[in-house]
Length: 522
Ligand SMILES: Nc1nc2c(ncn2[C@@H]2O[C@H](COP(=O)(O)OP(=O)(O)OP(=O)(O)O)[C@@H](O)[C@H]2O)c(=O)[nH]1
Image (cartoon, rainbow, N blue to C red):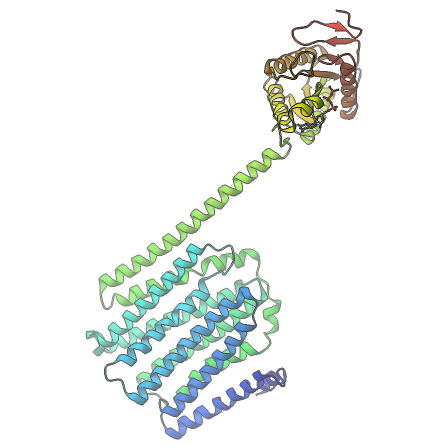
């Protein structure tokens, strides 16, 4: 009573307050009418029970309407499950009023009891996440429907077939119903403890309250029914609906808000939940083997096959996703440190490698050379042929540089614009000059026509900086030196190499000869 008063105080002036008091009235009226008529299944007590059930369904439906979009479907499924029970109760009432000569009303009642399973199983198994594949949802829905059809067949065959007269048949149906009801409640409780969002926990809390109360009531009801129904039994059925209304309208308990499962617990429970579908089919298979061993065997095998199919679909989708992730990781790995236009190393990769090479040189007392390469008259090339042709030229030059038989420790990088840098680890200046000559030759071999160049084709100028045993340079100093040497090469007519430390030495193209800076041959 105190709970109801606190509940009603929270809804002053609200329509829900009137619903609460209506429910209280119905809960009192039901046993009074049942006692007065002396029979639980008289018309008036049954009508009151339907009113109790209908009120609870209305409360769940209100929750559905007030919920945010992502969680609306589960509330609707819960309302539908409870509605199926109401429809079942209405059919029972019609049977009381009209009688059931052809057994049609009983059959329709069984249909609703089977249909009740579909929304129940669907709300328990689904993860309702946007990432969940549609094919899995369709598989689950199909199996839920198969379970409902098998359940209907199982009950009707036992109720109307040759086994109907066997008293053990009725126990089989009761045990099966108990197994189904308690499995559903156990799974929905598990889902409550696996839900990370409070809204979801609250939904499973409401669903588990209803399903567990329903399972306990059904357990007692079915056994009492065998000995003749006492007049008060209908009020016991009211309990699960009164509880459903209560948890739907009341503020959720504090522990539900405080409880937070870890991500791995939540994921494990969500992945485990669909097991219930296969378990239902296995249970049906075992129960059906009482009617026909073959039907039971086929049903149980179908359950295993379905579960295998479900796992296979999920696994194949995970493999697809993993492949996509691997590919993008590989692409990222390739892109990090890569120049997007030419595909060779970029400035960041150059910095790293240059530091390493200088450090190695310092430790081993060796050299480290650096070539700064710049395409001659590239502005004119761009201006006359356009930037697209300019880009294609840069790609060709980069390709020629990087395929010029450098050693594994060497690095060709795009420094920026039309400038490239080659790091030659452990390389003295003489060897660096040889490499520079080879690189110029490979670019010449490209034969890229460039009218503004005196040679009529693309050429490059190269500046060389070298760290020697006497001169310990850092990366920046070496880059500056090579850049100065490059400037000197440009100033001395382009298409040549200049060494930073001895800027008097220059080298023309591969077809040319060594010249001093003033143009004299050396
Ligand atoms: N197509 C293309 N052009 C670029 C890119 N980066 C820089 N450039 C162009 O490269 C040209 C460089 O011009 P400058 O610095 O004057 O050098 P240059 O014309 O080669 O003259 P010198 O180096 O003195 O022989 C500019 O026109 C830039 O727009 C690029 O990624 N693609």
